[in-house]
Length: 172
Image (cartoon, rainbow, N blue to C red; front, side, top):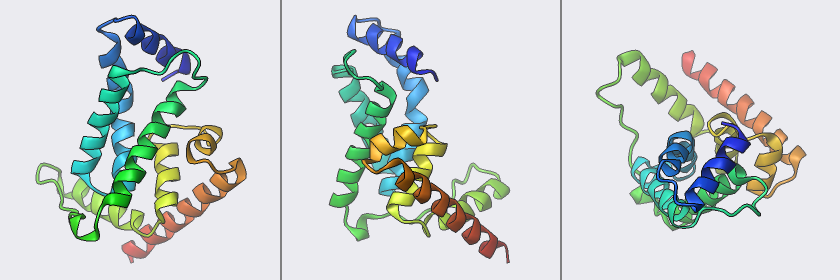
C-alpha cells in the first residue's frame, strides 16, 4: 500500500465517499489486528481493538495536516493496545489453542511461532510485528514507538536473533 493511495482514500472518507472506508479497512485490518494481538496476546481483545480503531477512523479520519497517515493509524493502534494490555490481568490471558480448521502442519508451525514469540519482550514483539506485518519502515517505527532509529533497529535485530534461537531450540 502506498502512502499516496491511503491519503487519497482518507480524503475520500472526509468527503463522504462510501467506497473509501472499506478500501482502507481491506488495506489495514489484518496488520492492525496482528499488532493488537502481539501486544495484548488476546485474539478477542485484538478483534475488539481493531473494531474500535476503525470506528474512530470512520468517525474522524486524519486530516491532510497528518504527514504520514499510515504511521499515525498504526500509532493509534499501538496506543490502544498498550492501554488494553496495561488493564489486562494475567488470569484474563487465554491459552493459545490451535484452530481446528488448520492443517496439522500449519497448527504446529503456528504453535512453534507463538511459543517463540513469547520469548520476546513486549517491545521486541511490537517492533517485529510492526515491521513485518504492518510493513512500517524503521523510520516510521521510530515515530510510532517513540524510540530513536538506532534503538528500533537494535531491538528488531535482537528480536530476530531471539526468535531464531527459540525456533532452533524447539526443533531439537
